[in-house]
Length: 378
Image (cartoon, rainbow, N blue to C red; front, side, top):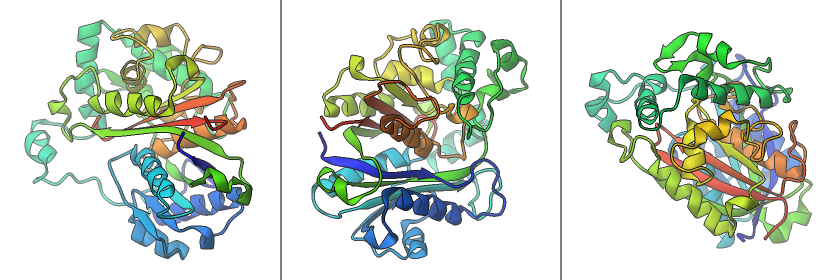
């Protein structure tokens, strides 16, 4: 039990295509919405964490002079790490109320930085010269190894996208809600073998924010508290070619079990699961590295509709990065859905859900963060 909870949670007012709003404004919009949810103002915030923008810029823009700051940036799971670091800061009294923000103009690129990989970086020296040009081509390396070693079919990979769309169909805010079939996925344009368009993440604008405080102060806030039961984090390598095992993420395998152990729970205690799904293979890796499935078993687990609506392990219930939202750093949206589920207000609410596990990835399996949320403290 960490003694820390989420008392404010909200996404940006609009999601999808927002050409009239800069990236920093998206951070601010999400922050103000989360403050409204918590029933507080910027004057009540004394801890700030963010990625994608500098915490210096964010704090100034919102008029906050914090006692604690975290600018950790390890890709899409940065916000899971921010939650973990905020827990430590709140436990030790470094601050009282922490604001964590995300905002990204991933589609419209208003006020957003470039994608250039420095030639002097590790990837710039040892991968870019061989044709790695971005996530779709880079992520092909591990999934092809997985398909060879475990016999996963194209149809099984496509089923991940089909299941995500089933969940998205129940979410009014999802970017795509129309049902799709395995045949639809395989008929969509091939982007980088074996990924078809419907197996690749969306490109959108949006963001979200969380407000954390200690359990003892929940009565000071309007938002329904959601308790943080456990946390974990790790990193592996910035180069996908240097993964120790292309069929497993070492960062997943450290961050996930650490969070479950920290929470004092077993797999049978988990009612709801979020696994960062920028591309269709990530839920497969997450299920296995978290220990919900044995090696090579996750494709069948998903194929059998066990993560789908009505299944025993509801997963990515907002529609995920494949159908709901993906502005580039998806982790905040996964955290938001876990909070909604624990509050009992999610569009596709899992009845009776008491524990939610939220696993994120940063870069191409380079980093991971995992948070266990509970409806009640343990």
